[in-house]
Image 1 (tube, rainbow, N blue to C red):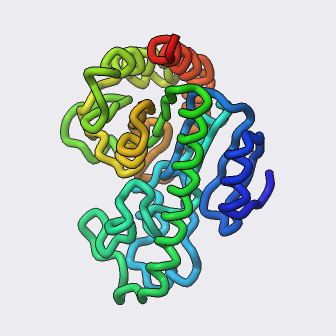
Image 2: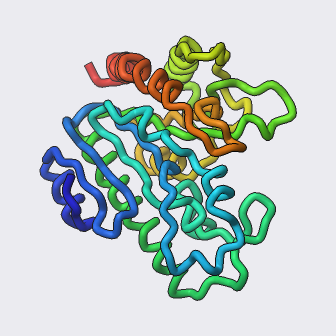
Length: 277
C-alpha cells in the first residue's frame, strides 16, 4: 500500500493505473487491482477520531462504534475495486451532505461539550470534499471504460434496537431508477437471502424495510452519473454483539466468502443486461 495525495490518486485513476493507497491524511483507502465494471464501498467502516476532538466529545468510543459499520470493508475486500472510509462518521459523515456532515447532535444526544470552532469543522469538511473528488473521478473512469457501472454500497445496522422482526439484509432503493434497474434489485435481494450464516442466523433479505437508501453517497453518484446503479446494502449486525462490542469473525468470514462469488456474479449479470451491445 502507498500513501498518496488526492491529486496523485486522481492522476492514477485517470491513467488507469492499478494501486492500493491510503489518502495522505489517512481518511480513506482505495484499492484498484483491476478496472472492472463494478466497485465496492464501505464508507462507514472507519473508527478513527482525531485527537483534537476527544476532550470535547460527549459520546464514548463505544457509542461511536455502535453507530458505525465495523467490518463492512472486510466483507468485500476480495473484490478488485474497494473504497473504504477510515474516519468515524462522528467526525464527519460521508453519507450526509456537506452541510449536514459534521454533527451537532447524534442519535438524540448532544455530541460536543462546546460548539466546534470553524477551523475544526473546515478540517473535517475538507476530508469529506476530497473523498467525493475521488469518487467522481473513479465513477467517471468506470463509466467511460465500460459504459455502465454498479456500486455495492455496504452498511450495517443495529437490529436489536428495533421492536419488530427485521431482515438480515436490507436494500434501500428509494433514490434509484427502479423501473430501469428493478430486475437487478430483485436479483441482488435474492442472492443476499441465499447467504448461509452460522448459528442458525436467519436468511432474510428485504427492500426498503428498515432503511430506504437516502444516503448522500448513493444520491451523489446517482445524480452525477446516469449509467451507474448504487445498491445501498445493509446487513443487520448479526456478525457481532452490538451491546458487548464483541465481533464474530466466523460470521464475517461466512459473509465475505459467499460474497466473493455472489457479488461478482450479480455484477456480471448487470453488465450483460445494461452494457451496449
